[in-house]
Length: 100
Image 1 (cartoon, rainbow, N blue to C red):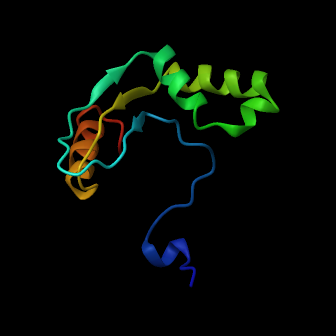
Image 2: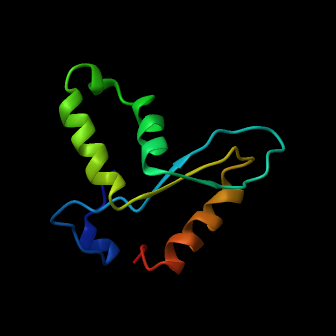
Image 3: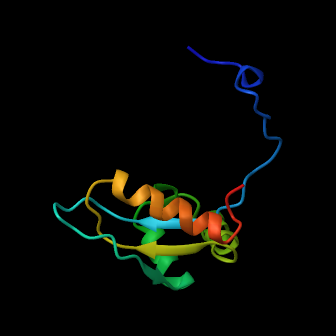
């Protein structure tokens, strides 16, 4: 059941939130989270693997990727359990002032 935002003492957004970090990961048993930074070009290629609309609207997709990669960082790493990675990701974003 939906809960109104005012009951959570929150504020509703009025616009888009910029993307600060893109993470490419997959579960592997006993894997250790060791994020490797990706260049903007490599990150865009990775994004293409997961973007079906590129077949119908390639110019729009590439323009979106360009706008995103002008600001966002991208990391890649296999991982074990997701709960072991979340705190690392949140800490990295908070340290750079990207998570308010």
